[in-house]
Length: 321
Image 1 (cartoon, one colour):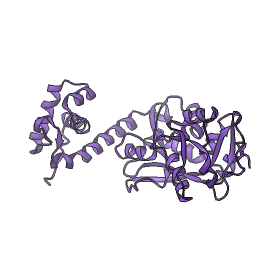
Image 2 (tube, one colour; image 1 turned 90 degrees about the vertical axis):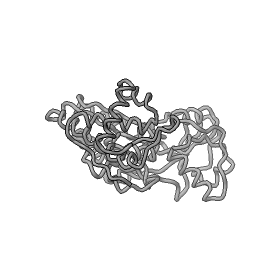
Image 3 (cartoon, one colour; image 1 turned 60 degrees about the horizontal axis):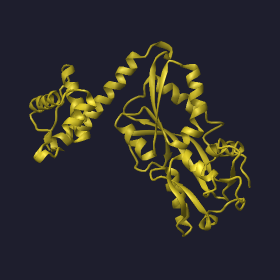
Image 4 (cartoon, helix red, strand yellow; image 1 turned 120 degrees about the vertical axis):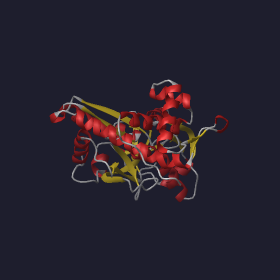
């Protein structure tokens, strides 16, 4: 593979790298131009100039099919790293003293956006109203990928990670029990609910990509059966709404159940039950911006007496059994 030496002299090279990454990710020159807000001829001209300066073609353009050459494959992770680090430096420099300005890009699973984050983000905003908070919801796999490419400063993910990443640093934040929720108007399930009890129960299931889906299905299969879904494919709010309507049971985190309202019945799972471990993750090779470090400090301080919040979470849910 031909080595790539990335030039740093001047703003034009940074712009060329931005255009290169856009084409590499869209595999289309016109869509890439729209993404970076330039004309397609200007983008193509700058890509050609970059190829001439590097002495290697970066894209194969056979029959309109845009693919990366070996040189392009070698350059892509370096270019993403340079762009991400430059953006981090820009934000860090622009922040004023005492965290009066800046932004934090935080990723979290949907259940954590509902259960853990509201109180912490409210406290953070009260202390630092000038900091812009950008929240991205997604499964742990997607959030790890976004962290690695520099699109997020921090992420709350479920351990173990779907794909171990040595480029990320993770700090355990809390461990939490999962519980069963059902409609308050439906017959009460066995208390506590055993995993085997779910064999004959209709379940409302999250869409693919939810860590909760994978954990629940894996627990059922470990007991020798496939769960039965009445509805599947929903986001968190939709799943809770379907349960309220009496369409079935759902397995959710205790913190989420504690905020679900009185129209849902919450029942504990029989020991050993199911639990999940939540961690705070960031890139190992780049320190988070100052504002992100402050939010990180507040999230870690939110641990009540240590990482195990099982008892505290269950105490606030009205869990039966």
